[in-house]
Length: 157
Ligand SMILES: [Zn+2]
Image (cartoon, rainbow, N blue to C red):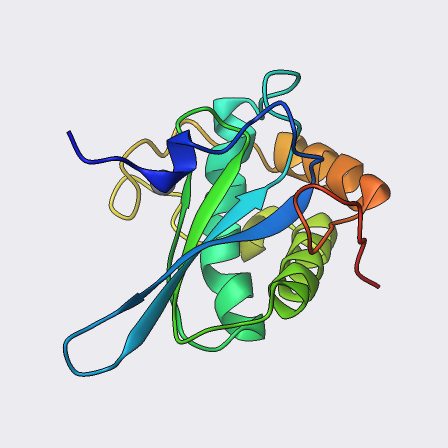
């Protein structure tokens, strides 16, 4: 079976919340695609409940695109401790951490009308959303600060 970088990371050594560059892949025509680990809570100590994580997912989809060029996808980890962010090109982790911080602040300030995709036609499990949970978790993450380094706390302004 193929070795996957994410499973070689020592999850006991990291200090969440942080942004980590996982890989930069280059296509046959030279285009680059980057994959980031957006770790919102400490692995094996916390996990964001599904409804809150689901609402954060729907909101990051819009707010991260507003704040960062080349966003392809942002999807939650099965362990519910964070997200994969896939982008065209390469971004400094400081810039990604600042965009993430801004997006989480946007979520904190949002109302239910700001959440995209919350009906039966636009979501695969529209009953499982919680803006209350999303905002409570965003507040906790922002209080701790988002580091541009997974192992050493370098909290972005
Ligand atoms: Zn959904």
